[in-house]
Length: 74
Length: 418
Ligand code: SF4
Image 1 (tube, rainbow over the protein chains, first blue to last red):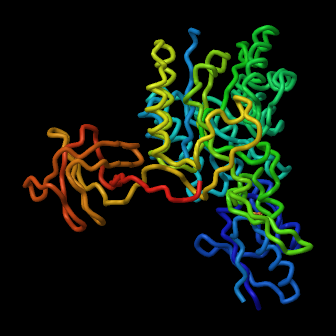
Image 2 (cartoon, helix red, strand yellow; image 1 turned 60 degrees about the horizontal axis):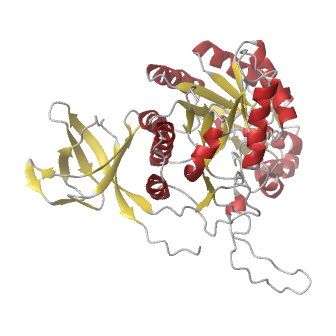
Image 3 (spheres, chains in turn brown, cyan; image 1 turned 180 degrees about the horizontal axis):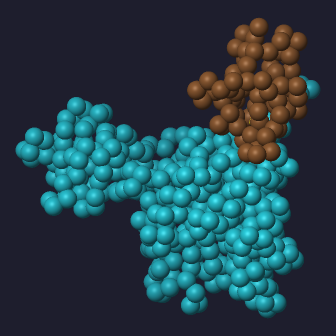
């Protein structure tokens, strides 16, 4: 299963990932940064596995993130 | 003109902050977290930094302005309020806002508000509107000088006051980069890279070179300058008298992404220019010297006058990156400073340094020291030069701290297209 990594600290809260893959991403009202749903924090990075059928939407999210902090690890 | 003129400098790092303070800035502006126009910057300040910055500035009697000027979504409101609360608590002088949500909250908690260039204030009616929130308003960089003057005169005439009860003060950009679009209204970076300038993530792709191709025939237009969207930088050192005469009170220098020597030089030159103007010694010769000095730090070529003097169409940069006449080469790090004899010790990690060379020392507490090496020592023996690997000492009148960086300043040959 593919994995996604989110370097959350650098997030500028533009909401683009939420628009692309709303099942995996939501925006935090507390600090204005996005949250990778179901992820666990490993060091500086939030990581989770995703299903194959989520891959396409999340690849779009990674492609469009303006600060390039979403990485798909296949 | 009794009221003092304020020079406001960008502080994108501790080095730049100290450079601004040492060079005579009256105020600095900086951003924290993601709601500022340099959200993309690698070394963004945090809330902890804010406390430190305010403390340093208070010690030096310098005002602090916090930039809070991106467009804001509903999900940003909690963070925006938190930032305002912290700013108020820590004694930040004012918040620089463009979104009404931010300015109205800041006003509610009694935090002074300044209006950002992102709000693009271009007429007197808008100044009157924002005066209900703000005491200082920066005018759009796209205004001509006559338009600026008319606005400041009207403030006087109609006695437009901010929340503090004083007349609203007008701030103007006096130096630095110009936006190809109207500030706050550019969608180029967003449209091409999904990276919104108005969320502090401008990729500055207008600065690149472009080709113009006829899609039907494939013919390429020959243009003498491929940098068709990159304006030269604004430089007002030659007519700062006109700006001050017009009643502008706050002079703002652009460049939170710039190196400390840029901040040091720009603040220093404009400080001298303003002081000369006040003393009645603002002369052509001095202007030439300042212009030469300003050319030694990052610039894309100067547009003397910019919009303010009502030039017609843009003057385009013609280069990618800087047209600076000097560049700095990293030499090494400071190891020690001996207070009594005022001697600094450095470990050379690259190149060669000679007696007479112009050097730059920068550090988060030191700021910027620019000087020529008058004498040089290796193993306590006088030498004429030293190379990579050497440990050297030489006199520096100001205090240097361990790990401060040492640079060699050299002339650049500008053979790039103009
Ligand atoms: S696209 Fe990137 S910057 Fe924007 S909210 Fe998502 S992770 Fe943050």
